Image 1 (cartoon, rainbow, N blue to C red):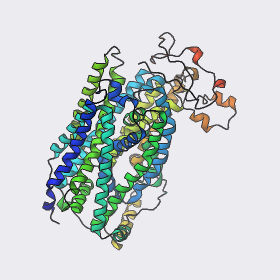
Image 2: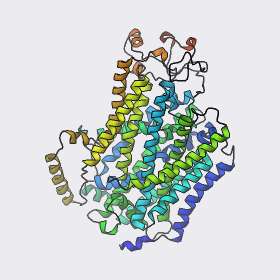
Image 3: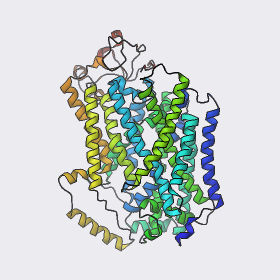
Image 4: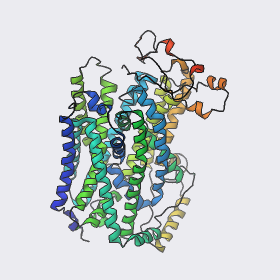
Length: 612
């Protein structure tokens, strides 16, 4: 079809798109003018800890089911086949572990920022380093999220690129600044429904225009886009069951276990049970979102296999090809192109609004409040809103840098989370699972993890070589794939290049392990932390559970029987007794001996507020 036909939206499309932006703004205004009117930091940043599990679960999905996934996953399936679908296996442990380890620890400590935990467990210096690392990660990722839909839309429809970027960023910044976390969560709920509706519309129309389900299946099968279970243990293979199903677990933990944007949603729940339930409710929705994106990629291949559309696009990017496919399928159906574009921008808005709010929270709670403890509540709330707006404008600036990256948006996004999220995950695991780790080990481990992460990431960018499957259908595809496979086996990288060839799906796991190993080595060299010096409630007895077969006296010697929670009095500030840099101390009589700790989850656990 003539590409010039696709440069038009009907009036209905514009109306639907405008309704999306207006509804998002309306929700922000509603929460700005209702309830407590966002007059306290507790309401603005934590939604008064009053949210139910359903809105929280939908918000958890929307936070990272961004435009990157809606465009990137179909482009991945179109180019490389369905192997990526196996990442769904990682969702099981990737949500089960946060539900039963990270959520109980964070919720019972009653922290507002996940990084408050790092001060309770280690020291203020570790908390600040963790906070700055998170800010760096999210600002870069937001640039990808803002730029992705605008770039793809511009490539196919001719929409003004930076006009779209500004519209997305400014609308999101305004409703996040006005309505706080409640507005972010409820707009996420609305936007999640729009996302699913838009993807479903494209799939249904696409299957119908391609000739029906049978024809779609035949074409993707003949085009070798249906991937089997690849059990190749080679970590340099881009996608196998191990890289996706095992490496993906670490990626999920860095997202749903310790990322402030998600932790903040858990902590906004009414009770701990609601928070755990919301984590479980994410699983089927994530599987549905993954299935819709993968099926969309297959329908796209069935429509275009053997055809080259690069001359019809303003970009040769596979990501832009997804929007071309959408406009091709929905062209001539008033309202549906607008629905999908609304779907795309819903995903972008939900993700960046979550980031703005979480960035404002960690900056306020971890960097500003500790320096200005006497700040009034009204001034703190106003400053939180200014921070949310400032981060919004900063992310718009970062969007400009995104187009300089050559990888697909999906790979860029996952690399960012692997390179920066992996070391952050390692830092939390070091503190939560290993009683001997001290603050020096934590700092050195985090720095070492980040150095190795960027060394690996930059090296992979400079030496990258991605081998997409050929786009032919039928017998030609089989011959082309066999030829590509033979060429690949003859040109395997060696030495340092092989290290740089590590699959990006292993980045989180590799960097997390680096932080833990270096952290433990340095901790033992500088003097391991004694168990009685560890803040009660900051350890999870992972080693005690793994080595449950050992005699009790050996488990005691290994310092791995500490329960998660204890019935304790609230912590009192006692500068003369606490370890340096922590800022909190417990009276000695509150420390239970190992023999007195009877169970992992006691019936009562006093919810003590952290004084920072």
